[in-house]
Image (tube, rainbow, N blue to C red; front, side):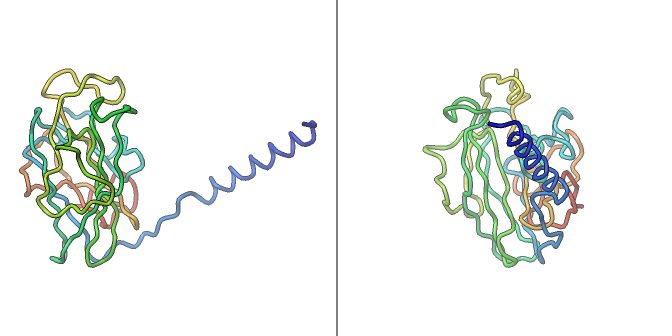
Length: 217
C-alpha cells in the first residue's frame, strides 16, 4: 500500500470516529412512557449489601443502571412486575448468555434479559445475572408471566473481576434495567437495606430518568 493511500485511509477513519463522537451513538428519545413497569424484589434480600455496587456507578454492561442484590445460596427468585397504570404486563426472554465468559452456565451462572411490555408498548428489559437456572432454564422468547420462578442464588467458584465472592454472604444476583426510550432508573434503597420479595421496589423500566445511573423516586 502506498504512503498516500495509507494517509488517506487514516484520515478517513479519524473523520468517521470524530463524526461518531460528535453526534453520539446511540441516539435515544428522552420521552418516557405514559405508564412504566415497576420490578419488585425476587426474594427477601439485601440491596448493595456491602456498598461495593452502588447503582449510580456499578458496571451495567450496556444497561442504564445496575447493582448487586444479595442473599445466601439457594434463595428462590421469582418475577414480580407491576405496571404503574394498573394495566397488564407481558414479558418474554430477549437474551440469554453465560456469565463471566464461561463456556457453560455452570462457570458463574446465567443471565436473562426480560423484555417488558404494557399498555404503553415495549419499554425495555430487566436483567438478572449469576442465576442458577431451574431444569433446562428459559428458552429465547419464552413468555414469563407474573410470579414465574427464575432460578436460585448460588455460590460459584471465584472469578476475579467478575465474581469476586469468597463466602456465602457475598452471594448475589447482578440486576440491571434498560429503557428503549428515556432511561430506566432504580429505587432509592439505601446500601445494605433489607428488601421484601414481591413488595420492595428494585427499579422501573419505561420510567423517565434523563441519563445513566439515576434514581426514580
